[in-house]
Every structure is written in C-alpha cells, then in structure tokens.
Length: 263
Image (cartoon, rainbow, N blue to C red; front, side):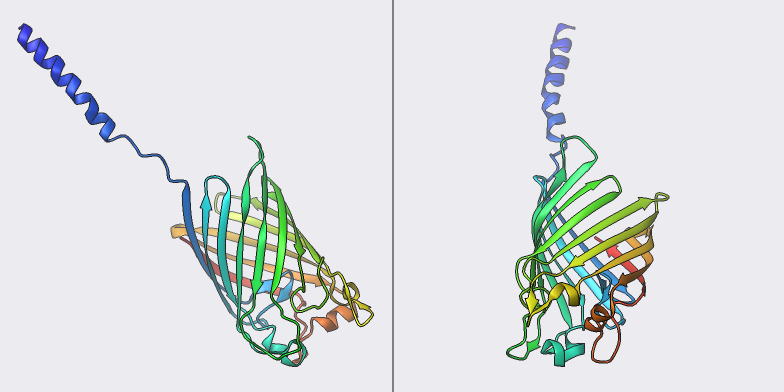
C-alpha cells in the first residue's frame, strides 16, 4: 500500500511540468493588416481625384504594441494629367501615401492621440518648370469615443501650389455606431492655403471648406459596403481653381458608393 502511494505521488509530481508545456504563448506585439477597396470615385477633402471615375485603392500597415506604426496606401488618380496645361503632368495615374507615427490612449480613458508624418507621392511624367505635386504633411489628432479632430500641416509646396508651406487642413469627424454593423459617418473640413504667387495669395485662390455624410455597413469576412455624399463651399475664384481643362468642377457635390475588405 505504501509503495502504491509513493508511486502515485511520483506520477503526480512528474505530470506537473506537462501542463506548463501547453501554456499559451504571450501575444505578439507586432500586427500586420491590409485593405483593398473599389470606389465609384476617389474624393479627397471634397475634391474628386479621378474626374468622377471609378477608383481602386488599397494599402498595408504595421503596428507595434508600443503605439508605433508605419504604412503605405495607393489609389487611382487622374487630376494631374487631366489638366496637363495647368499642372505640367503629361502622365499621372496613381497616388501613393507613406506614413508613420505613434498612437494610443491617454492613460486609461476614452481619449486617444495620433501624431505622425504623411508623404503624398504622385508618380508620373512632368514638364520641367512646373511645381512638383508631392506633398509632405505633419499631423496630430485627438479622439474621444466616436469623435475625432485631426490637424495636418504642410512642410513645403502643397499639391502643386507653389510657396504654400504652412498650409493646413482641419478634419473633424464623427463615426457613430447605430447598430453593431451600421455606422453613421460625418465629416467637416477646413482647407487653408498659405503663401502667395505673383502677389496673389494662395488663400484667396485655393482655400475652401468641405463636408460629408454617409453610412457604412459591416459584412461577414471583414467586408464593408457604404455610400456617402460630399460637397464644398467656395467662391467663384476658388471654383475656377478646382475646375479642370475639360471644364468640370471637381469640388461639386459628389456621391460615392464603395465596397472594401480588411485582412
């Protein structure tokens, strides 16, 4: 009987390490995500970038548990080549973005922050003497639950406008969950250009306001469908600036439908 008890005790002791072998490994601090979407057109800050034609978009992101992140994103784009005589771009069918920064929550609250740099790149063939449309912006954002405010500040020439360093954009958003799947998307933006050219201020020519209202619906397999309406507020001079050589005003009221997927 004593031998049996000793054997049982030894078996129990030897079995303990077996449980530690199957213990769960700690979660990785690294996260990789991707996204792709098909849009009826690409509208950026209230301005159509594809002459109201269809756009394919997608990107990849890396984030670390510390809050550091980097990413890249690309979209169809034609606004530069659509007005070659104004922009100097003989060919340009793509916009690419490269960005990085830090984000996280402020202590244990519903407030969040996001700071970083974003480089807009427009590959293509450009005639010498015209301003490069590539743009570098620094940004800072703060959020609370479904509300957010983001301030972007240009560090040089801005989207083809010369002497525009210091141009800024304020993006106010509300993304309110009506149900677990349906979200109301609201946006209001202010675009203010700095500097001048030939004695004419960039502000008087290119500044404007824009807004958006839309709905998005989450589907299985990480798909999302949605639609939104967007419009701008401009005077006649500013409308002329955002009218391409085909006499199409790119800041007019726009309707966009889309389907996207994250992975």
